[in-house]
Image 1 (cartoon, rainbow, N blue to C red):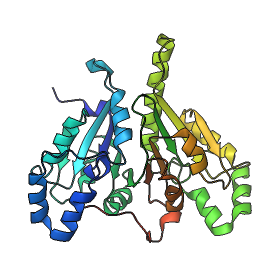
Image 2 (image 1 turned 180 degrees about the horizontal axis):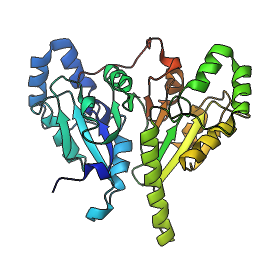
Image 3 (image 1 turned 90 degrees about the vertical axis):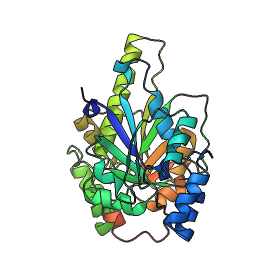
Image 4 (image 1 turned 60 degrees about the vertical axis):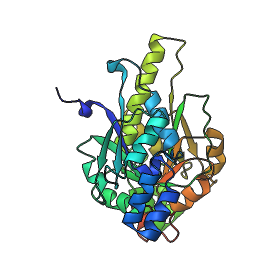
Length: 319
């Protein structure tokens, strides 16, 4: 009987997001593919250090229980490596005790094209070109940024924070702000306060996380001593009167978030430093740059705020 991947909450992660590949990527960029291949074989037994997405992936996998009917989460490795050079990544996965057993190695190709085959609701990578290409095809993807975040190994809670416009919702309201200014933006949002916004690029992932959260709440209802392990937050530059449309949109989706911050221009890093999410998604590089030092962060280069090329992207990776 085929494995029921269509019943799982699947996240696809590139090796460049899961592990710190700065050293090996430097070999690839400076000396070429053959030297890179040789380097990976020689260092096959050297364990790779955790990357930006590692805390998220580890905690997602911790949601799975021991019984087959209690394993809702699946993580798939998607890599530009071939199986030979990718062996080091799988050895590192084994060392870190991550229950990842499925992968797509595409030998320099675009791994995200297999997202739908694996039922993936998100693709995380450090490769900006891959992320942009995935989004252009309507696939949910985000580029991780370097971080100094140190995870607390003693806690089990998974915290995920989202920007709203350009992430959960589309950027139609953001376009009004960018083109017509704050006053017209607020007028539009007040007028349409009871009208839900169309879905944004990460709506599938947002919905899957919400279903995982609901599953945790149901466990709490059956066992009062159980502590739900999934916490969802929204951190948006919106403030009153534009806040009401956020609530309207969430209600239309049937999704409840645990925390919402309507910041009205206050730096998002100020609240995210307290919340300590295991990943934060935003469509604006300026917001990511202000947060990534305190929290693992991922940029979604979508919509009107990303019409121009990013001038100072983080280092690219070929793997």
